[in-house]
Image 1 (spheres, one colour):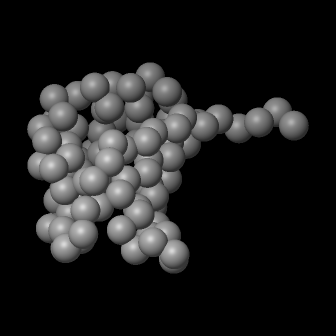
Image 2 (image 1 turned 90 degrees about the horizontal axis):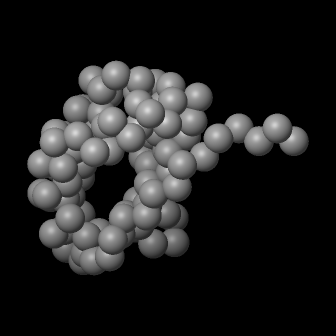
Amino acid sequence: MIRVLIERHIAESLESAYEERARKVLQQAVAAPGFISGETLSDSHDPNHRITLANWRSEADWDRWYHSEARRDLMSELVPMMDRDETITVLEQSSV
């Protein structure tokens, strides 16, 4: 299993529109092969900073979703609402 950390920063006054569209992305991801679970958190010091932590069966499953046409279409609606590029970090269990 891997975890994917996605960080996004929403432009001022677009929070509610972002939330609505972000839910669509999550609904589609849940249906993607290999998706296990996920949660989205808000930064307590910056309400426009969102962090999503998603668990995927494998990096191949994540890559398939990340490069899918479905995600690309959904992200085309989200990207204009962000004031910087999303940051994605793929994490795996440490052997330590």
